[in-house]
Length: 125
Image 1 (cartoon, rainbow, N blue to C red):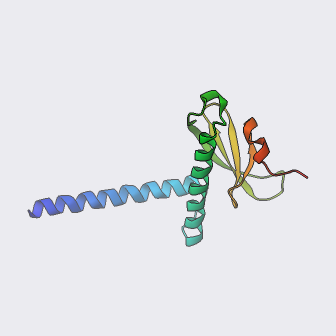
Image 2 (image 1 turned 90 degrees about the vertical axis):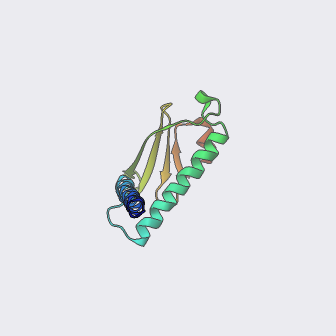
Image 3 (image 1 turned 120 degrees about the vertical axis):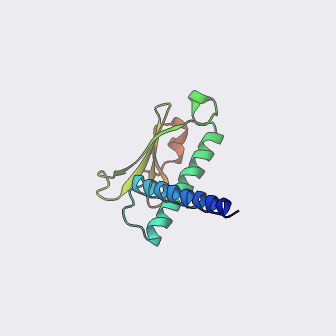
């Protein structure tokens, strides 16, 4: 019985360690170097904004190459916005070659290669 309890505790510790390593890796990929309440909130916002925009885009069938099927994300990358002089944006590249760009602070769509997204982009005027 004692061995079984130790086995369960060992499994719990292993899951916590693997989860911690995965969380640190995700935060590093998102460009968050220091771990604070603000950075955790920023990461959560990015995850939820990315998820909601992907689900609404796939449900609307905006990706004509897949006829409404979900398109897999190939790469997500945070880039500097040199055109605006400051700030950054997250660029999501899909397996069909298309991309979408989101403002990292607001999560709003600011650029896209998809024709169906052009009406959703902010006005340049």
